[in-house]
Length: 391
Length: 145
Image (cartoon, rainbow over the protein chains, first blue to last red):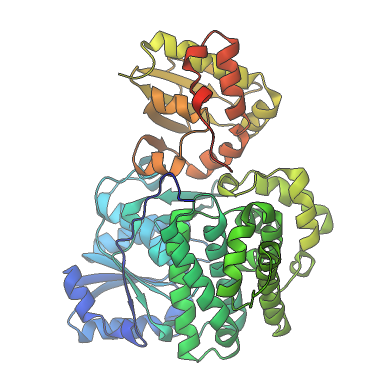
């Protein structure tokens, strides 16, 4: 059945090639500015990745006017203002962010202030508050998970009020996403597995929730296929360019899918678990993913049955129910294989969640905004057993 | 021209419904927990309603333009009316600017599950309070999910 309404908007140009991050002249010439300010973090900088890109820019005749490297694990509100001030003072015409989700989101939010001035919270809190395009923003992801290079949201942590601020706006979509496997080769196995499972969760939830469309489905299914094909190899053999490239492309495709279709109960539970017990987002998503699929089973089994072959499963002769259960089993098996490699926990008890904290996770999940998009109406009584199973 | 002929008529309908929600513990308890202060700014016809959940009870104040709200939601009265039937696709409404939300979006999103039960209440409320002519669900089948 076709949706009553959907919108698909993806103006971000995506370029993929091994080594392309140091050879961006054709793409940057089209953007048409000369002076870029780099936003990254100290880990990426210490790995030499920032210098590598900067050298490529200089060689191609572009100027790097400055660098902001103080992005923390969470994109913090105070960093956004400081970053924007430095970009402005440097005389830059645009931004190049090199990093994971926090770096990219910091750069997105800083670009609002750099382009439009004002105060981020007072002037831009809300949905789609911007009225015109921002200054150019080029993104080079160094993880394969968040998909922030193609999403229209910046998530910023307000330390003073201890809350995450969400800025959804189509003008936050970057001009260019540069997918270069070389930039992810140094990602450690645990991070590779967790961020990869985060991308898988984006794709599966985007595929099954009730905001979905045929176009987002195509991106989600493509991402799922690539992740099943490459995540084990990327985790075990981090220097394999093919596997790293597959995961980067998958993460971007999953990002395109979920920025249109949103996410559901798995993210609700993961957000609550992260907020209560500081469990990393990708790990929490990985733990909850098969349980979330089971929770929604009756509502999503037709689509799950379609996903099973995409995951590499042979569903010949199976009923819809059986094929759908095979998709869940495939996800569970993938997590198990990553667990066997010692890089991914399978249970909440393995990541420091106390058994008496499960009720609080259920309550937090129900209060999460993503619950609105979940295909099954969520309530605490029905959700709690699945969280207990994940324990 | 919208469905409601005057601000007074729309005020009777929408503020009356908000007061019903304020008296419904299933919904009011969650709103009070969020401590949210929302100003709804309606157009065609014009009306402003503040729903103040910062105290011990949910306080509904039509035509309050002084209170500093945490979130402001602007929309036409017709969109607002359809919203309370559960007929508004939020993504569509926000991206097409049929609804404009200003303020902390995570707090707004957290409220959505809390108010979901109210969709079933709205048509019943209209019928029970002499506003049956505004009940557009009589010929409508809601989407699944």
